[in-house]
Image (cartoon, rainbow, N blue to C red; front, side):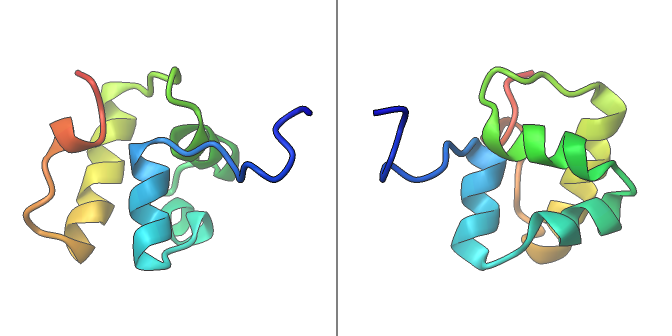
Length: 76
């Protein structure tokens, strides 16, 4: 009923954050992107961020995983 006990919906970015124990707050701080936008990026598979936003997110992700590829996280 209404997704009870199924856990939160996560995008590829959200799953990456969860796997590494990294918070959305960390990503928001590193990228200077609003917490609301980071939340959308982390949970909504249908959300399409702008190219500048994708670049900021990928720069932060690559601080943790230098081999990360944009296409692993976003459909562009």
